[in-house]
Image (cartoon, rainbow, N blue to C red; front, side):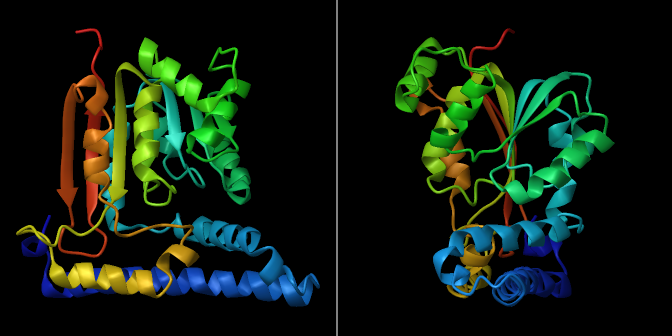
Length: 297
């Protein structure tokens, strides 16, 4: 979907929309800091515990924001209907996708959510959808240094070592994998090393496994459907502190390239079905399914 698919008014609104979110997140950040100093008496916390306060503020913002209807939400249901087997739900937040994970084809779900402030909402979402016995919360990020030990603790990785690189190398060699489906919805924008993370997630996929993705990406301004103006606006929001207030989210990532090249060591994916959406805006998306080689035909 490009500028030709949007009216002028819709396009202008799309340019401004991230600014509204940034102001919203900033208000939560200021509020959390003020409450910490004046209500809790922790005068030096904004200096000494900056990371904790950022996480708390973003968690409160995300609880409120995740209930809002946004344009990319329409891309999610058709993709999650393809989830099956053992599923890794990366960065599920408050569990807004939970109603889409009730398929009988899904055996069990592991939600890797590093923000502890969201766990109560996430657990409540699972219970409300009757998934309390299927949904397991992993209190960790998706980076391998966090995720692999959490999977070991759950008994999903049977190894004699705790060395993460060795475990990943063994999985890559044996090609056994752990998950049948990995779900990434608006999360790869905030991981520290996105390309490495995507490669490691690929390693955790079983043969024939699917990665289901809905991710916002850098504006493809060099292409006919992209927009120089939208790319400049992305840079402006970055300068104004987008990543700081929005949970380390980055607007300038070439996630599409990282996803496609994650399987290079095995000669590529079995299939790549990725579509681009909203390319003329500051929040363009890539959405689709990548299938690992080796599945049963």
